[in-house]
Length: 123
Image (cartoon, rainbow, N blue to C red; front, side, top):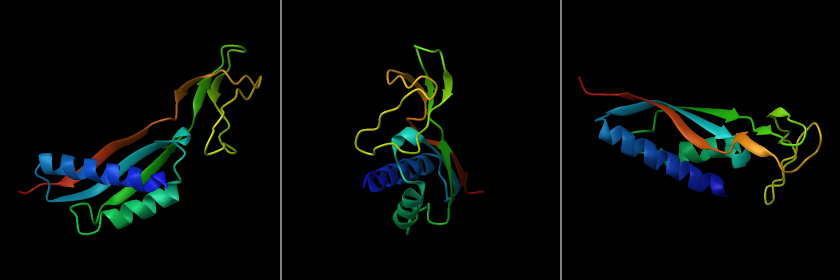
């Protein structure tokens, strides 16, 4: 269950950033998760809620945005979103939706990024 490890990394990063900026509270966190990270957003959200208890992040709103997998095919020159609906969690194979080539370049969708943190600071 790598959702737990991912959630812990996110919480640690947010708390570190909040402390560096003298935050009194974190109110909102925007997280972008690429479809190729193979994280279940509902499980991640649950883990984030559990791990932020009794921290500066406890009352924060989490916005989780899924980013589609974007590919480019060197064979047919297709550039666009890949089908990620039936990916094998252990051996994900991305193929071009146009020509079925499996040697594609992944342009987007393999990152997990804390895009924005909204904090409250002392007056």
